Length: 295
Length: 331
Image 1 (cartoon, rainbow over the protein chains, first blue to last red):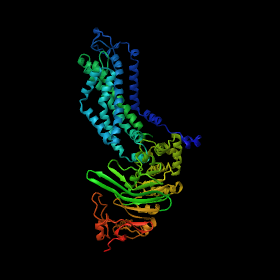
Image 2: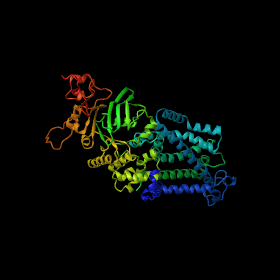
Image 3: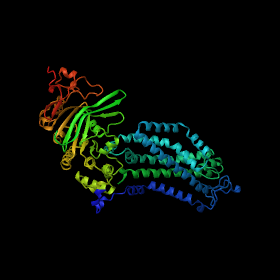
Image 4: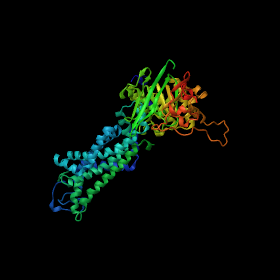
């Protein structure tokens, strides 16, 4: 710090440009990304304020109002128990969004760490991590997730755990291959020639270069996680009725496909739009984070 | 060597072990670098120039590569016994390196100033503001125009010449005792090349850093260096100060290299450019005797049998050739 003492009246050139500000500016310029973000925010608000937005109770059974078509009272009709489909989609968004995002983040974090360690350190570390990943990939993942759910019980936390356990291995593989390519780049050698410690090389030099890939993986992982949750729910080890998640709504609604198609299609469309929105956000983020796409 | 020797390398050997056994890529390399001197290392591709640099830096790929030396003394301190952590403490602070490819030597997703200032963060623990101020000084020193606006640039926003200036700034930011420049101008066009070379010589005069300049261009050697080491197939074949080397080249390889420099003044209508026949031998299958004998115009019977040693010809001038060895059978 000794050198900085004479720089108390430093010129404004010493103010660094903010990476975050630049990124946000680039992101805001991307119309599709903003559209996606808007949709997701709307969904989040809808999920949080569902009890105040919807006049209907998502759990009240009204057998005299089964499978009604869309009307001004029930905008998307009712299901086989006479419950309002739109209300259940809003409540389902709570679970589906969380299930989409949280396990994806967990498996992405673990996978990134493992992948970079494996790719950069190589040798025995690489061998151990990759054989572990092989085991995860070789094991039928649905079975693995079901075992976790059966033994630990069907609740949301265990769904996170099961999905993270299933998901990290493929992330680790992708990140590892990227790291292997990056490791041979001259800027890594230059960093080492500066006396940079291995941890710092991994954090400061490898990781930022992997981020674009991670964002793509993240946008792919969200729909996958939502699907996984619906599979588990469909098999009866996921979210338990009368709780609602989108996957569960589609699974239950498909039996009435011909009498009341909206029961299954509406939550399906919700999944589709959400996935699409996350993809737009991901594309926008990737471009905004890429220095060569700015200005 | 003169009183102030910054770097003294003795018996540096680097081996690579692979599936097909051991390959010695550097064989008994010894040389000195005086304070404030520019020492050239010249040779064809595969002669071991870059490997010498990596071995000195402790950057030889592990675990395949193995470096050994009788001693490598940096400013009075033997660095052969330093472990990985000790070498990390030296890299960037006492010895820095400038690489060949300025286009890929900077991390594309990080701002230039952060990278150029990284050695300061590592070795002196300076804060961001202090680093930024120091990088700005360095940018001015290495002649980057509008240094303020370049601080926050990303590498792709700079031209090749500017990037190489930034790399030199990074190399010199901790005022190292020794800067190793591995073909610093090969990837640049000719005008930029001469600017960068002048900059390096100028900085040597101002900062006092010694420089090892690795190149395959004898023109650069003539212009820049005080002393020259000529390498062939992992060995030093000739060592001399720059004047002796160009006036009395003593190893046939050096002579061949000098003869291969195209000269604009000579009329050579229809004549082919002279070159050394053949190519650098595969280090795993070296010829018996002198490593240069298959390509040498002056090869004698002894050259096919025994490897010559580096022999002094004049003070500060040595060659690894039977022509100059008193024990050689002159037939």
